[in-house]
Length: 317
Image 1 (cartoon, rainbow, N blue to C red):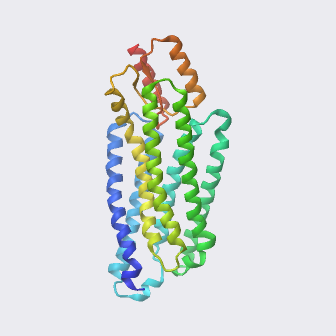
Image 2 (image 1 turned 30 degrees about the vertical axis):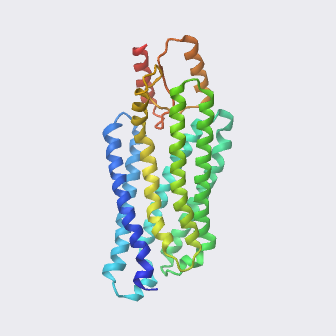
Image 3 (image 1 turned 180 degrees about the vertical axis):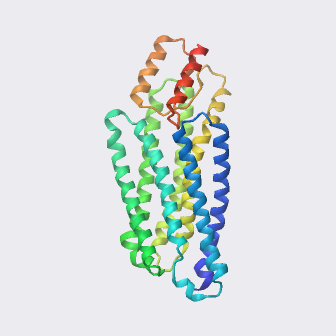
């Protein structure tokens, strides 16, 4: 196939991934500058995702440099996978798994008590399967460095690896949309409904973008001579890292958006919590009638932030 046919798609994918990494770095900086009050676990999560994404960019650059510079014109080098190939796949897998676990955790806390495991158990099982197929693919690529190994394992490792990813994304998006919509129908606050509608739009847009790339990777994985699947995989982890950071960084925008409406239902903090607890607190607020602030959905689920918010609300009453 030659250098152009073999690595043209990888170079294009690598250039796009480098740009997305710049966005990831910017969002990470914005997060640490504006959300220093978040729980240490969330800060650690953001830092870990950025470090993994940085490692992936380093491995990706090594892949391109090895084939396009060091071994330029050496056609025999195209027959073998350099070590950074499976390494980049493993790091990308870790980024995706971490972010998917983050959203699964949010779904668990949004669900009513009786439905928590009913909703999250299928997602967790698919996450385990996806991780297992990813590890299998990585190990087989490390053991057998011949590029033909991808063609040999595509039906029992690579294809299930991509398929489970698509299923997980569909389940996460569907669950979040249903739970947010159901929460919106239960609240009497117009500002809360606006926030929930905005969050649903964010979730759907994120799903469409990630699913388009994931489905394209799944289809190209089935092609024997296509290298586009690897080029697309370069960007998948970047999309997930940015979706996580965007969900964290939009909180301030949602608060400011509500403050410009001029209503008495100011959103001091957006906090994910159990729906049954949310219904109880809403009824209590209606009963007392002297509460001017309402807490809705906080994607950080930070207990310390809740305490700070509660004290602020008491001062304002």
